Image 1 (cartoon, helix red, strand yellow):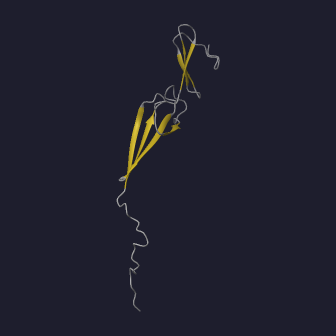
Image 2: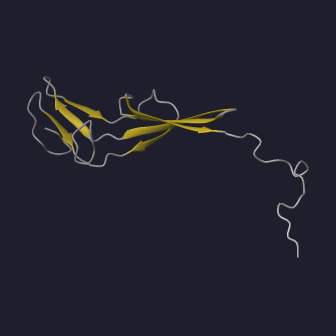
Image 3: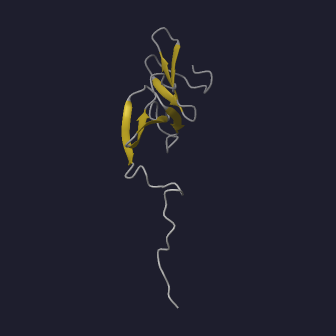
Length: 123
Protein backbone atom coordinates (compact mmCIF):
# COMPACT_ATOMS: atom_id res chain seq x y z
CA UNK A 1 0.00 0.00 0.00
CA UNK A 2 1.23 3.51 -0.86
CA UNK A 3 1.28 5.35 2.47
CA UNK A 4 0.93 8.82 0.91
CA UNK A 5 -2.16 8.10 -1.20
CA UNK A 6 -3.58 5.03 0.59
CA UNK A 7 -3.74 3.24 -2.75
CA UNK A 8 -3.50 -0.56 -2.78
CA UNK A 9 -0.86 -1.84 -5.20
CA UNK A 10 -0.27 -5.21 -6.80
CA UNK A 11 3.20 -6.56 -7.61
CA UNK A 12 4.46 -4.85 -10.78
CA UNK A 13 1.80 -2.14 -10.71
CA UNK A 14 2.96 1.39 -11.50
CA UNK A 15 1.19 4.72 -10.99
CA UNK A 16 2.07 8.42 -10.83
CA UNK A 17 1.33 10.58 -7.81
CA UNK A 18 -0.27 13.47 -9.63
CA UNK A 19 0.78 16.93 -8.56
CA UNK A 20 4.05 15.51 -7.21
CA UNK A 21 5.31 13.88 -10.42
CA UNK A 22 6.55 10.77 -8.63
CA UNK A 23 6.27 7.31 -10.18
CA UNK A 24 5.56 4.55 -7.67
CA UNK A 25 6.05 0.85 -8.47
CA UNK A 26 5.36 -2.19 -6.32
CA UNK A 27 8.34 -4.56 -6.52
CA UNK A 28 8.26 -8.34 -6.19
CA UNK A 29 9.60 -7.93 -2.65
CA UNK A 30 6.44 -5.90 -1.85
CA UNK A 31 8.59 -2.80 -1.41
CA UNK A 32 7.75 0.45 -3.17
CA UNK A 33 10.17 1.96 -5.66
CA UNK A 34 9.87 5.70 -6.31
CA UNK A 35 11.22 7.66 -9.27
CA UNK A 36 11.10 11.44 -9.22
CA UNK A 37 12.30 14.28 -11.40
CA UNK A 38 15.92 15.18 -10.78
CA UNK A 39 17.94 18.10 -12.09
CA UNK A 40 20.34 16.62 -14.64
CA UNK A 41 23.98 17.04 -13.65
CA UNK A 42 25.51 16.92 -17.13
CA UNK A 43 23.94 20.10 -18.52
CA UNK A 44 25.99 23.28 -18.99
CA UNK A 45 25.21 26.97 -19.11
CA UNK A 46 22.79 29.27 -17.35
CA UNK A 47 19.89 26.83 -16.77
CA UNK A 48 16.34 27.35 -15.57
CA UNK A 49 13.46 24.86 -15.24
CA UNK A 50 10.56 25.12 -17.69
CA UNK A 51 7.45 23.57 -16.09
CA UNK A 52 5.16 21.41 -18.24
CA UNK A 53 2.02 23.08 -19.54
CA UNK A 54 -0.22 20.27 -18.24
CA UNK A 55 0.24 19.09 -14.64
CA UNK A 56 -1.84 15.93 -15.19
CA UNK A 57 0.81 14.18 -17.29
CA UNK A 58 2.09 10.78 -16.21
CA UNK A 59 5.70 10.36 -15.12
CA UNK A 60 8.12 11.29 -16.75
CA UNK A 61 6.10 13.70 -18.96
CA UNK A 62 5.20 15.71 -15.84
CA UNK A 63 8.89 16.49 -15.16
CA UNK A 64 10.10 19.98 -16.07
CA UNK A 65 12.44 20.57 -18.98
CA UNK A 66 15.61 22.60 -18.46
CA UNK A 67 16.50 25.49 -20.76
CA UNK A 68 20.20 26.34 -20.75
CA UNK A 69 21.84 29.31 -22.46
CA UNK A 70 25.51 29.73 -23.33
CA UNK A 71 27.22 32.71 -24.98
CA UNK A 72 30.38 32.88 -27.06
CA UNK A 73 31.75 36.23 -28.21
CA UNK A 74 34.50 37.06 -30.67
CA UNK A 75 35.50 39.99 -32.90
CA UNK A 76 32.80 39.15 -35.46
CA UNK A 77 29.89 39.02 -33.02
CA UNK A 78 28.15 36.92 -30.39
CA UNK A 79 26.73 33.41 -30.62
CA UNK A 80 23.92 32.51 -28.21
CA UNK A 81 22.98 28.84 -27.93
CA UNK A 82 19.81 27.73 -26.15
CA UNK A 83 19.54 24.01 -25.40
CA UNK A 84 16.51 22.32 -23.85
CA UNK A 85 17.04 19.10 -21.87
CA UNK A 86 14.73 16.62 -20.18
CA UNK A 87 15.20 15.37 -16.60
CA UNK A 88 17.61 12.66 -17.82
CA UNK A 89 19.89 15.24 -19.44
CA UNK A 90 18.89 14.23 -22.99
CA UNK A 91 18.89 17.09 -25.50
CA UNK A 92 15.32 17.79 -26.70
CA UNK A 93 15.82 21.00 -28.67
CA UNK A 94 18.64 23.36 -29.66
CA UNK A 95 18.49 26.92 -31.01
CA UNK A 96 21.32 29.18 -32.20
CA UNK A 97 21.19 32.95 -32.47
CA UNK A 98 24.11 34.84 -33.97
CA UNK A 99 24.57 38.60 -33.72
CA UNK A 100 27.07 39.78 -36.33
CA UNK A 101 28.98 43.04 -35.95
CA UNK A 102 28.82 44.86 -39.30
CA UNK A 103 30.93 47.93 -38.51
CA UNK A 104 33.28 47.81 -35.56
CA UNK A 105 34.02 51.54 -35.85
CA UNK A 106 30.44 52.75 -35.99
CA UNK A 107 31.12 55.47 -33.45
CA UNK A 108 33.91 57.91 -34.18
CA UNK A 109 35.62 59.92 -31.51
CA UNK A 110 34.47 63.53 -31.35
CA UNK A 111 38.00 64.68 -32.17
CA UNK A 112 37.91 62.71 -35.42
CA UNK A 113 34.49 64.00 -36.43
CA UNK A 114 34.67 67.05 -38.66
CA UNK A 115 32.52 69.90 -37.42
CA UNK A 116 30.94 70.97 -40.65
CA UNK A 117 27.28 71.74 -41.07
CA UNK A 118 25.46 69.08 -43.00
CA UNK A 119 22.99 71.51 -44.51
CA UNK A 120 23.52 75.18 -45.20
CA UNK A 121 20.61 77.53 -45.26
CA UNK A 122 20.99 80.88 -46.98
CA UNK A 123 18.60 83.65 -46.14
